[in-house]
Length: 299
Image (tube, rainbow, N blue to C red; front, side):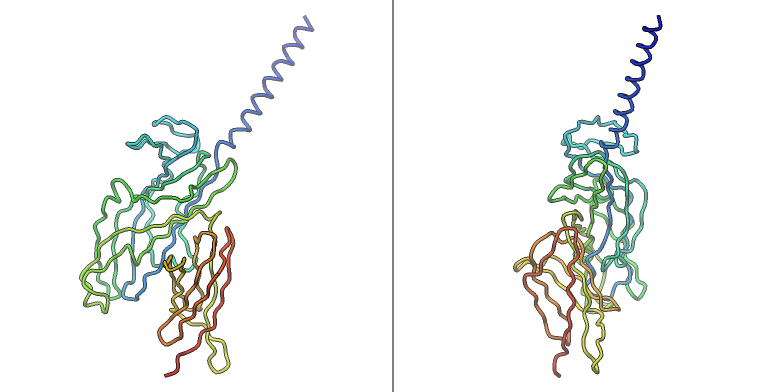
């Protein structure tokens, strides 16, 4: 009887070890995903605010694991099915109101940071409402949202974002305000603007495969280096302009979400000479520094 008792005890202990091992493997089924929002700056100073409220974000899941349409994972990530039978993981369902003009030169809004099923994601849908533009004279225009509140704004991720077990992945959404908020009338002065059309343009960048360009623009004034505000820094891939930004009050600029590669950078501001820099290398998950000293054009 003692032999049988000890045999049962050993068997029970072995079963417990297997159970614990399987439990420890569970975290590898999930990885951490964070999504940040930034803005490609508006190229004029007639607008004080460009507001948008994001109330839901989901992502198309392209992994090999099959999940039921009605599944709700232990970490709170619910899974829905689209008409084409693709699985969408609901990432966020709470309102976040942002003034996109505040998100420039490396400033971002953290939209979410949560555990999601491992695998690849190739599409994000952002659902928005409450879009409006406030001019510097206080005039406010409420804008219609074309399908953004019903089917979401579709943003493709290329290359696909891969979430690995126990690791973190970071996605940057670059909301191009200058192309998304199209002024009616003219943009020479406040009186010429009669409203805006909302045509959202958002780029998704995987921060693990993308890099950053940053620096400071200065000039020499009375033998002292002085920073310059409002200098336009434009990024070109061949003859195609990828994005641009403007220096802040300290003369600093930062452009995030650039895919690794070689680019041409142009520095320009009225009253100063245009400067062009070729073969500027951007490396994945790294920052490239480009400080420039500009010269005033002779009057």
